[in-house]
Image 1 (cartoon, rainbow, N blue to C red):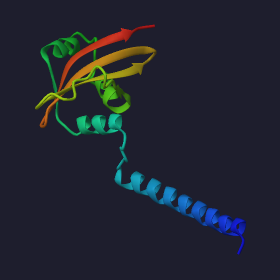
Image 2 (cartoon, rainbow, N blue to C red):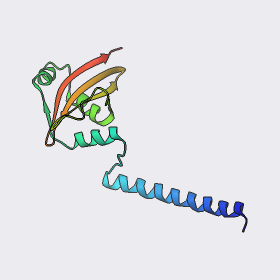
Image 3 (cartoon, rainbow, N blue to C red):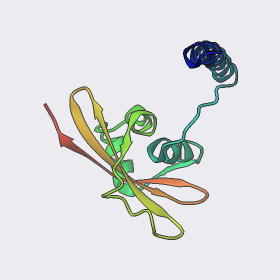
Image 4 (cartoon, helix red, strand yellow):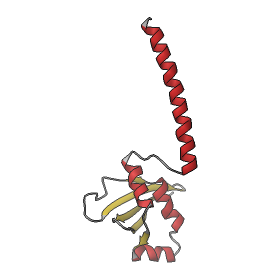
Length: 130
C-alpha cells in the first residue's frame, strides 16, 4: 500500500478521533462543571477561587466607601492575569500575587496574599482609567 494512501487513512482516523474527543470532553465539562487548567495563570486563579476570602482593613474601607465591590474582586479571580514578575511566589507560608484585569476600559491591579487555608486581599488600585 503506498505511503500517501496510508497517510490518508491515518489522517481520516485521527480527525474522527479528535471530533469524538472534543465532543466527549465538552459534554463532560458542561455536566460536571470541571475545567482543565494547565497553564500557571489558570492554576493559580483556580486555587485562589477554592479558598475562603478575607479582606485587609484598607480593602474593608474601600468596600464601605463604595469605591470597590465584591463583584469587581470576583472578576479579578475569574478573568484576571497574574503578573508573576511583580508577585512573590517563593515566600512561605503565604505567597503574594498581583492580579491585573481590565474592567470597563479601566485597568486595575489587585494584590492578594495566598495562604494554605485562606486568601486575603491586601490592596487594590486602578492603574489606568479612561
